[in-house]
Length: 513
Ligand code: ADP
Image (tube, rainbow, N blue to C red; front, side, top):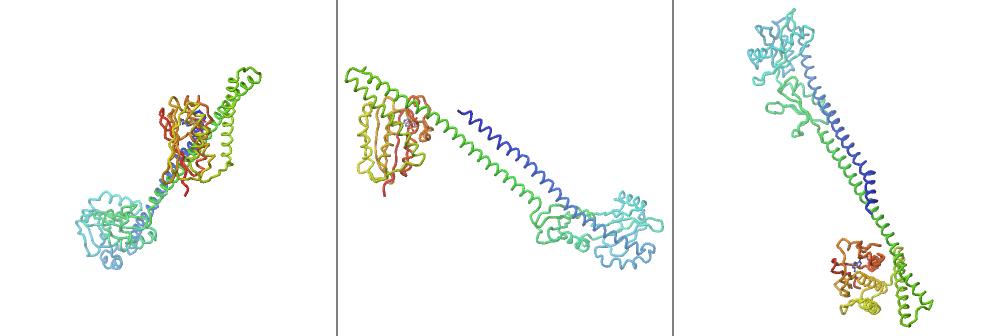
């Protein structure tokens, strides 16, 4: 019985879940990949912006060097200060210029504004001899390179390069005040590249002191990409987006996509489970129906066979005594009743299924219905050896019921009580009421129903799959008919049962207001 269900489960899994998982894995991979690509592009872009600021400072210093060259400043050293008066104008960041020969013996400052002493500078130059030698090599090949040299503790920031004068080479240095340079020379350029979307901030590395920012309102926003200043290695320039950082945007986008994917998968899983369940239910129902057909055929065949056998015996005049004849008539009438009961229950069921059964609800007393049924059934019950105990509450309030339908329910419950009892042939039938309902219950002391099966016994065609039940005749329709009738009355049905101890079925009907 489980095989087709397992097979369908596997097919559904392969058809829906496997492709979904596969697609999810690919999608997660591609989301991660695009996240990496985007982050790379973004960080490259930030770096390019920072690079353009560095390049600009290089351009400024080159223009200073060109300017000095055009002034022919070094050909007439006597008029240095005079000629450079103009040069220093509008260059507040430029503290001084020095010129020295290779051995540092001829060392000249261009003006008297000395923030650092000659010795300190010469020491710095000597300690950077390697770099300086390279500058000499470059100039021999016709390339003038500017080299920043700094000594943070002495507060020296200079940029040196080699100049040629009458075939001789000298080292020239610009002594620069970085704070001033950043604020007066670089600020306009930084502002230009920052535009409205990004914030560029420059800080002194050692104390993280803010030197310049394009937007004070974003001072607390963490920097995303940071670079050393080419000109002042002990200063940093950092950049961040004013709005959400791209990393965060990409991250939240990825989270969103992943949760969407997860949600879709969950939905698919729920749909598959739902589909699987309803297919399972249908298969189960189909199995129950086929069991039902074989049950009913068996149920019909037995009384028919008995009726025809006894009728034939009577017809052939083989029964001699009146007593025997009466016994056979009784068998024939009982079996005919059984037949009509089965046929009726099938007809009732199919009427209910097609929604054609109409109920005639009228205020009535439940006790009356019970007493009526018992009086007609007493003989049948006694003949089966059953002892009935009635426990009806007086002054039961009235309820709107279809008496015929409720009698049918009660007969079904009594029939089951008889069928599923063992040695203790006793039925307890009682009525009672609470604030909302009047109720009747039928208790037997028979085989009982397991907790699991108690949920299923009201399903159509369901019969508890135990040997005893299968030896007992039935269609699996009785309780489902009872269930539908009670539903149509706006009532409810309860079962309390214990294996081998017995069962109590209680039918509740709303009290008439
Ligand atoms: P059936 O024609 O098989 O009796 P019902 O719908 O009346 O069909 O009952 C469904 C199943 O519930 C039965 O097959 C039986 O297994 C179980 N059942 C019903 N009533 C009782 C009871 N009083 N005691 C034990 N089992 C019961």
